[in-house]
Amino acid sequence: MLSRDQPFVRLSGVERTDDGAQVADETPVAFVYSGRPHVVMMCSPDNLEDLAYGFSLTEGIISNPAEIERVEQSRHAKGFELAITIPVEAAARLAQRTRALAGRTGCGLCGVEAIDDAVRAVRRVESPLTLPASALWRAGEALDAHQPLNRETRAVHAAAWATPDGTLVVAREDVGRHNALDKVLGALARAGTDASTGFLIVTSRASFELVQKASAAGVALLAAVSRPTGLAIRIADESGITLVGLLRGQTANVYSHPERIT
Image (cartoon, rainbow, N blue to C red; front, side):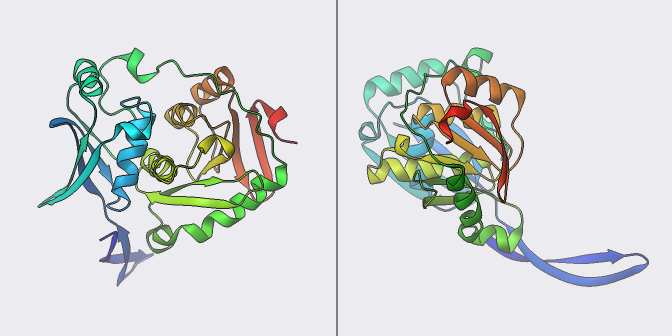
């Protein structure tokens, strides 16, 4: 269940009235790699196999989708477990790198112990991608139609991948902005679509871990409806990513590598 009806008392001046609305569900999802618990993330409980692929790729647990041998999803009393089978070598690297941690909804740094692991080096994105500003306007305008859960609850984020002309191809929602992006990148990986041939758009602020994930996927442009952080701008600049913020209607700010937008 992605949402449920929640009664509440509405206060207006001195008046109190009974009311109700849909609220987004938030469910713990345990990631278990080759039998070893890694992290528990708070997520919207849909498209979890996409999340397994996207998280594994953008966190550097695997280097390509083919390394995931199997994903088994099971329901528990309080959430879900994703049993992800990866090669022995990858499982050994993961065991050396991390210990099991719990991740809150807003956490994009789950399973890391050191600052160097959190703000890790990003690869340089070498891409011939260019696109007109109209592609940003088109993608931004279309995104609302791909957010049915947010229309009900006004409590979740969305991420999407678009072709260079601004056509949205994959969109996902989640209570966590990084989860939504991982679901998109995981869906692309499972479909065999090269993420570097298009661009990403998110409904949240552009935080540095979103730029890291775009870099890991080889995506050269990330657009956000809110502002970026200073660290996100620095990482985007270093990695060759065009970072767009405050995408609203037909206006936006380009914080790094504006030459990619014609």
